[in-house]
Amino acid sequence: MKEKVPYGFAIYPQLSIFKLSYDIVDLASNKKMFSVKKDGAFKQSIYIYDYEGKEIIRAKKTSSWKLGYTIEKKGFHIASLTYSNKLCDDSIYIDTESGRFIGSRVKGYSYQFVDIHGNLVFYLERSTGIFHSEYTLEVYDNFQPEIAMLSSIIIDIIIRAQHAVTVSTVTASTS
Image 1: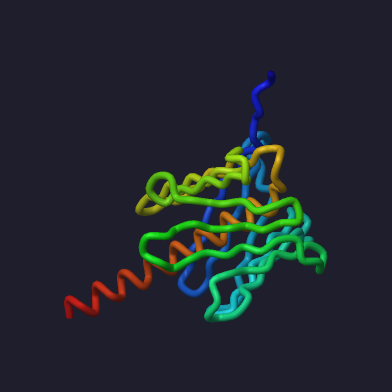
Image 2: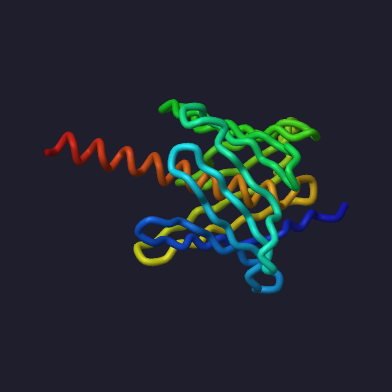
């Protein structure tokens, strides 16, 4: 039996004072294929554009207090992503028309997503440095790469928000 080879992408966060965006590079060709823009603070929208500037896929936060996003392609709902903010539960769920996929943290802030049979569908490795961040995304044939890319961006935004809360809590308690 032939071993499955994943699609590989590198995701580069582009940070500025008031704006967060991303570039997505296809590792097979080493070319920038997509750009990602985030709008809004509490009720966010995240858009992935191809190299021609066409919108490929988008996610909208369902509401400012609910922990989930709806994912749309060409105006049609194709998936939902939900997560928990509980201390001991870091699971993320993606529901598509083909089934439910469960993501869990495996090491550091890296996540792997599996189907209901336990087959790996995509893996996000977050490696961050002081001056440079790069995330590697491996997507297998049994999952849509666009949903994996958008979900990876959402995971990064969730982790950044959790870090901001932790830093502000520590700062407030030491003041």
